Length: 165
Image 1 (cartoon, helix red, strand yellow):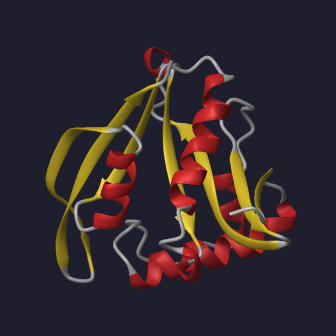
Image 2: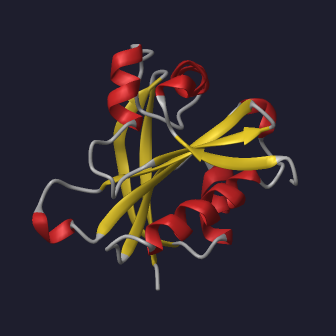
């Protein structure tokens, strides 16, 4: 993993990030989007005007291998110390330990912000993400049954959380 490093998201990486996300939209239940996003929709999702919420791109030399983002959990003041963590890896980069690397990086960043709790929302079918978050100290705290529908299937979502020191 010596070649991998993180950098803040800029428009220079937008096409690569959009391509990775589009794969998950079209072929998986990892996201509940059912249609590919436009460049401008993707930019809105990964480029927050609030410096507390950031996206970091994972690079291997100069190749985008994935990205990890910290976003606002809910638009109410009482949630201001909670953020949602999301990770998407290039499909060719899975099972290399990069998910844990991305979680570690975003947690380090989160500790520099006025944040107390990180949450992740995961499709019940996404066993790899469930294992990743559990392995990294996240606790299952919610299970919503049949709240989404994609590819003709009713899908559950699971909530995971971690209190960060």
